[in-house]
Amino acid sequence: MNSDLDRLLAAPPERDLPNGRHRLFREQLMREIRTEKRSVRTRVAISAAIAGTTAVLVGGAFVATQTIGAAPSKSSTAVDAQFRAGSASSLLLQMAAYSEKLPSTQSAHNGQWVYVKSESRDATQPPAPGSVSRTATLGRRPRQRSMGPRPARSGRSATCSSGKSGCQSTRIRRSVH
Amino acid sequence: MTTRARVRDGDPDAFGELFDECARAVYNHAFRLTGNWSTAEEAVALTFLEAWRLRGKVDLEGGPLRPWLLGIATNMVRNFTRASRRYSAAVSRIPPPEAIPDFADELAGRLDDTEQVRFALSLVNKLRRNEREIFALCVWSGLDNIEAAEALGIPVGTVKSRLSRARAKLRKLVEESGEPDVARGQSIDNRESAARPDGVRQS
Image (cartoon, rainbow over all chains, first blue to last red; front, top):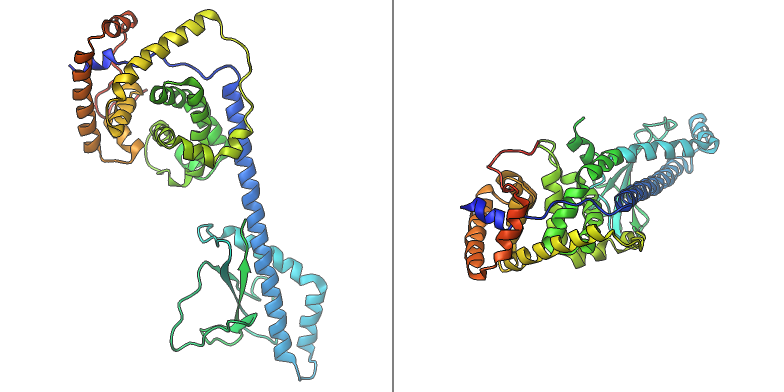
């Protein structure tokens, strides 16, 4: 009985897309995919550059803070030399590679505060590539605990609430278009 | 690596193959829902763009991706205005079809098909939207109940009950319409029913 009804209201024979439209739509789809992949790569590179630059700035400020007032030692001279020698660019590349491996679900929206955490274990040692700082992009502002110090609202950087030595966090406003 | 895994990973080649394989099915399904070939063409473009956007939701386990695409096409037709707005930039980059007239017999065939579908649609459009979509997927596009459930993201039992209700209403509508051309037109084609038993996949 159902088959009788289905026969009565059966669909007409299937048709192909009109001449050239199949190829056109396919090319359009491929073009959109390529465009989106390119824009994603650009976004990742920009965020990595922001994170890397921030890490370098924070690291530099931290080293300067630790060495201020003290006589220039051999190790601090080595740090300066390494920064001058362009280790920042190699650090940026490492940041970019690390950021590409991060899941993209924690993307920040326009105007959101993004905390970039960097951690230096030993300020007197020159930052070895890959281990000088650990940068993580946090999607949301972490909940404040009563026991920890609040990050400064107006400052560019503040001490990390974990209380670890050499741990700093900086917040940056990120614009995503 | 399976097609599902490649699609989920955003492999452009997998999407190209998927387009070659399923564009025709999506085109015809969209036509059956709208009764308009031009709208169906646009729905094809929008459906695959939406599929690309939703690729992360593809289950790694499962059969062919045709039901998934037909489900996207169904939603696309349902929210055509919103979808057109979302992809307005992409759609605007598609050149309009060339103004080459169809051959006379093909044109006549198209008109016949369009008339036939219009009559069927006039009856099917009297159903509730969810019953109409189930009928188009199960009867016209030949999905079984499991595939239709996957396409629309609803339980199999819901598919069965909606399809049963749709058939009961349509049977009544056909009896009331007393349209002789329907029976005559379909008997010329002498086609078998598009409905398939549960769980039987198309080869």
